[in-house]
Amino acid sequence: MVDFILNAIYIAGLIIGIFLMWKIPSFKQRNDSQVSDEAISILIPARNEEKRIEPLLASIKANHFKGELIVIDDESTDQTAAIAKRYGATVITSKPLPKGWRGKSWALYQGKEAAQHETLMLLDADTVFDTGGIQKIIAAYQAANAPISVQPYHAMKQPYEQLSAIFNVVILMASNLYTPFQDRLKPRVFYGPVQMMSKSDYARVEKNKNVNQSVLDDIEMGKVFLEEGRPIKSYVGTGAISFRMYPGGFKESVLGWSKSFATGAILIGALNMTLISLWLTSIYGAFVRPLLMSDPTWVQALLYLAAGAELFWMARRAGNFSVLTILLFPLHALYFLWVFITSLMNTLFKKRVNWRGRDIDLGDE
Image (tube, rainbow, N blue to C red; front, side, top):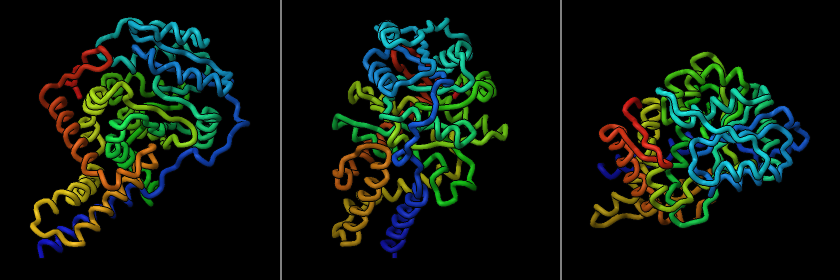
């Protein structure tokens, strides 16, 4: 009887996973080459991004972007500003960080103030456009007639990057946007790497303390829009824009994911957290339980393969994850657990992390 109940829980968790990832809009099939980009201001906040920003700037140039390109140099000590100028960007040197602001929010505010156009595209410096990607995102924004955000396709090159599978999946699950009822549910996530909105929309959120003080300004920004009755839309960047999240090595990956992931889990809401937790229970149960059994059955073998196959199906839509994910998913699960616990310790106890050479106080998160 116990075996039956546990197996039922694991199967239910896998079904919940399918429910949360039912349909994910992307740009793979879009062709919007006729869209004009002349009245767009691209804003890129950058702090010590000399190793990351050049591929983005090169991709913008390759897309023959005709609008305004602004890089806000956030107290960089490397060649970030020089590289940006070489690609024809207008470089703004960030003023000292005021009390009550985070670095990225303050940089974007200054970029918005300098922008000449009414429509803004906000980009992280580690993103890279595909051919036609700028036009595809602009077309999606125009069709939505609302602020949009994009989670870039995760283009990985090193084996350690593959360990980010569950993080990618949880980010998509938390959005509340990809279920069969996506048009009836309240969105929970407004992705930070790529955003598009009008200046007037940005003005609605820029001075909100929950936006400019939070490490997760993107989630807070989405909440402000929704509280004010402004709809938002989000996409996965397949076919338009990609990134390598933490190309600086395994340590950077751990620091990057752990700096705010627990805070994000708290902010997504009780129902979403419960559903995601049930899905995670099925993932962990699929490989932990057979280890505790003296004689695992064929049912456990099928659950193991089903959990791995489902994780691969989900993660593959977010990035170029290897088919080995199906068999090696316990490594992903253990890495996720370790980093999440680290993030929880940072958020609840240490309340401080160091990222990109800046000490970040999480005390107000």
